[in-house]
Length: 219
Image 1 (spheres, rainbow, N blue to C red):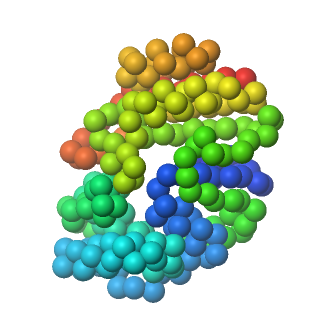
Image 2: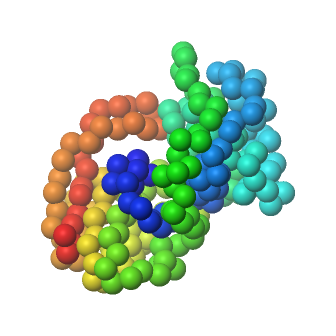
């Protein structure tokens, strides 16, 4: 999302397999206002986490309340993780932050997002025009794959690279620069650049820079 905001396109389609993330941005588009108690409290955190999972189990994952709770949980949970179990339950524990700055109003994003479209689903279901610029930011090629209930396997990494290589327009993809990821994109005709990237989120709290791949085609 930060990359897309930086490019500031007038029209954009943002797709993700995580329905809660897409719901959050859909409500940002409407000028989300947070109307719940926002405190860095473990008691409050687990109360809100239970309520968030209850909403999801009741088919209310697309509600404004779910979007607000998703924001709070991501700001307050451990190391900024977004993790779900196989039942689709958000299961990140309480964080260890001394202080947290919360936002209550997101109206400033509404104008930027007004002509953007948000969708939830598998990337192969996205309908592209030949001239569309595509930026792909899949889950890193690491052991952690529980960003959503569905996960993201090595087979999905291969499927994504193959799908991207068939697009006739400009394509940029990012990923952790593991040897097999670099080989995968080179085999599909991508130009590859490897750089040190800051790490904002990690399951173990490690913030050391990581080797990241930027893969380009038709750019």
